[in-house]
Image 1: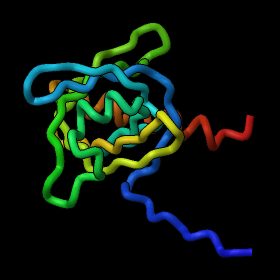
Image 2: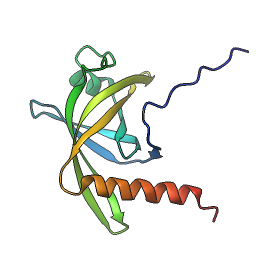
Image 3: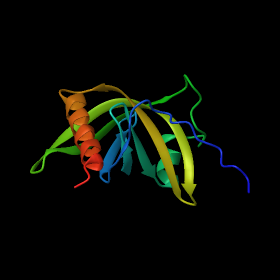
Length: 136
């Protein structure tokens, strides 16, 4: 049996699985809707179709370090159960991988949040991490 290569964690922060929609805006103002696969304090992994990847990454190759693709993201997180807040964050597509025939994961590293966006993401991720470690 061949040993399985360990993939390095491309983020220094713990990730939490999240299922919500995310809008990705390109510098030209055009927008695409994808799904969030996981979220951390420093970035988000999104799941996209081949067509969305073609629109976001014209050559469909994982961006080389320093040649990242700038985008603006919009998504919501529930700060309290009844009150979701909108997060708007500028970021860079820093990673791409194909996970199925027509499904790709894109890693977006956050660069700057509008308003209290970072605090909301930080609180939401911390809550999900705490809930996942609670044995009850």
